[in-house]
Image (cartoon, rainbow, N blue to C red):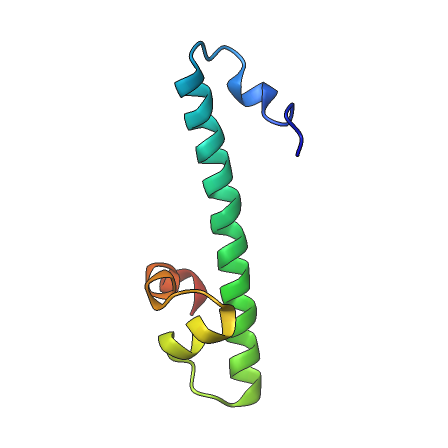
Length: 77
């Protein structure tokens, strides 16, 4: 953990709530990008194996929920 990582982002924010919100936005973006990458890699594996690329199959292969696949489907397929 690097507590100083977001100093440039939170500089000037006065309250703890504002700082926590900025940290949450940063974390959400990072996790979202990681999930999308996992889905793309799972899509490639399924396509290469000749299996049908369904949302359910993609969810199992990537280790996420079908709801997550559906939400990110446009960026994957």
